[in-house]
Length: 446
Image (cartoon, rainbow, N blue to C red; front, side):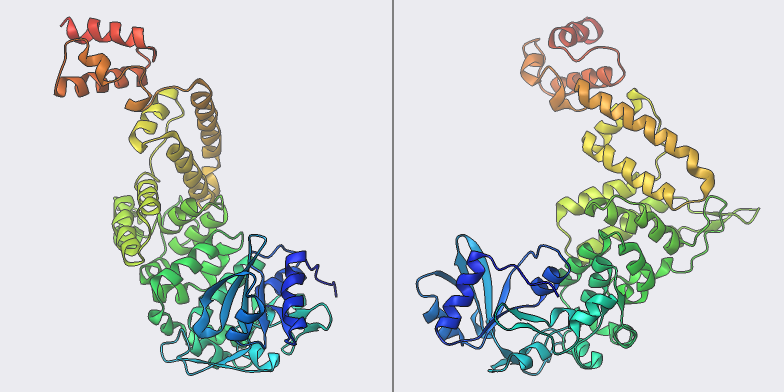
């Protein structure tokens, strides 16, 4: 078992508490990550010192009372933040999320027993080594997500742990231990008691993982508790030669092929959610989904408002869903106009990534589209290199230039849009003198 490298700042925490007669251990996710040879995001400690005793120990340091009620302080050493929490056991959980109270204890084993999963219930001290009462190290080796003690108790206490289990499975590519998995399904209804902000955080962290598509597919009945609209896609046969999967399977295969960017993954997850509501059969028995993009926008907007998704993310995703089925043309003129329609070149690049993922989830007969996407990528590079205009702010002239020609009011806006359209159609280059002369010749002299 590898030893954990202790930094100077971590050593200060250990020494400060140990020299005052208290125990101190690294605990939780940072120990897990160290054992997996990963760099932890946060370094957390646990100690038998009470919050008041901790404050006395660290009186010469900057201390933030992060969660003093639950025994947690944050100590700042050399601009680095370390959370230190008193050993505790939790009181009764009444809302399937947080304990009504906590009880401070002196035995670290009692503290580890309250934690969610065995891989997060390992403690480490450089003098003592590892304390692993629940075989978390073995579960790390086996690749298992397993509740500490009884899954029914652990997950009933805090239902968010259900989604955390799914997220850890996606992040680590671990299996969920059978009894823990069975209990996740059994208690999934408790997720209705969890704040949407917490649900969104777990969703975000899950779908951007390489294994996220599998977690969405395998546990759709759990995700369906918090996003019931997803359930309509399950086993919905598309009856269309362009597709070899039902709507949910297509979505998850496409998610597998998507660039692991949050906006791209959210778009792919919801891009076909309107298909079940727009399904029709033609005389040959083939399925069609006319207007499904706009229906998907409508459904996704309702979901995002319910989940309190931020406006920036929401607007980008809804725009990409709206145009995800657009028949893109690999010409410079078309792509520049598309830039104008979507607002900027970055959105066009994201749309290409969405369409590539969508294509990845369709029948193999659509592999010829890849060449079209490659052609569009080359056009985008040219636009970037030549800084070609595709929005009013990119024009070499502005409103003042137009007013200097004697125009005013709505004529100014009309003239700018006329010039932009002319540039997009390659009728004139985006140079100030050329644009003014072009406007005089084609608008002012008529």
